[in-house]
Image 1 (tube, rainbow, N blue to C red):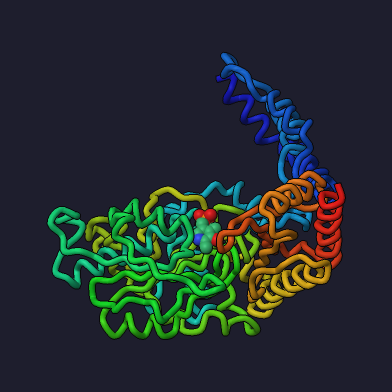
Image 2 (image 1 turned 90 degrees about the horizontal axis):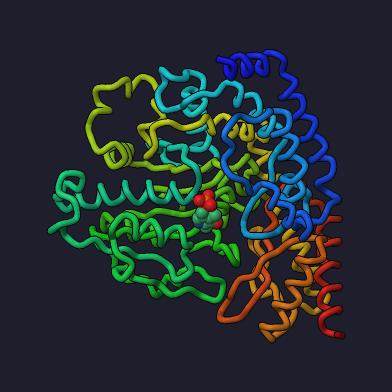
Length: 466
Ligand SMILES: *Cc1c(COP(=O)(O)O)cnc(C)c1O
């Protein structure tokens, strides 16, 4: 009882929340100027967290204190504007504020009857995304944790539909004795796609790999003949080069023979929602399912993936494994769990709604095109300093190398990372070690780009004159 009383007091006094708020503001104010990757001392201090599970309860104020004192400095300063690692993202203020507010709601968005507000906003997001991306009227959306999960859902729907077309009822009959399904994807497909293929039981050895061109796009000339047993997985935004597969003709071919096309556009699908970059996604609306993240290019908080699927019946049947949806409240009210593998879920679509409402169509264009412009700027400044830029900077990705020698490239990269000025990671491109730059945050300014390019140049000069 003592514990409950204490929690009641904390809830009512709100001092704890104010304490967290004050730490959060202090963190935000320092993020732009501290080292992008945490200092070695900050990482060493994480040993402060190593202890046995306490026997008795702790004090809330000191828990927050400890977290801020040792946790905040050991975080990566991703919100500071000079983080270019992986393909992450920033966070738009209104989406963060929305998250704070809705955290107080603590909604479970499985069923409409659990949370009418989050059900309504899922519905609104679904409609807006369809309009923004120009997807077919029948498209439905599942709000999942990220693109990995969204790909899994899209391919599960594909599996159900393709088998059904082959007179095989997958939920009942399973894999044993099933007619073969052909899986076709590009050599440069994302690891999350490969994982979903394995999880769904298609078998990695059964993948028909299609070779890519010099930008990592599927080479259309190398596509195998498609038929009604095919699931084709294409990519909007290569994680290295940012390149887009040629959707238009591949989708036409697939539709002619009854094959399914899934487009993985974790960060790149948003190009389809802009005026100035939508040429990259030409024909994408002819696919059957799409996966995309709010938490990358759109700059919502993490845990914001979206699966879009034009075949509602296939998706729901695949994910619910029963026809129970036909007799539930489904139809009138939106029960979010119908479109996702999970049941209980937090109200992540509210943050997505806030982002879309705040940006509007023009804001999406400005945000996404702005990332592109700054990627182009980064590439130009490095090119002028004799770095080799390996890709056409069509979107937000730049792959560069300062040297032909992989070991030197690696040393320079480590020097850049240790400088604390900015952070980029490495990748391998056409057999060569490269530095991968991903411009993903609205915060990043022209000055951030120039300052980071200078850090690259300084690191190169330091290593090369040593
Ligand atoms: C990030 C990414 C994924 C995985 O998305 P998560 O949200 O991290 O699960 C899949 N495909 C591509 C192209 C990505 O960039």
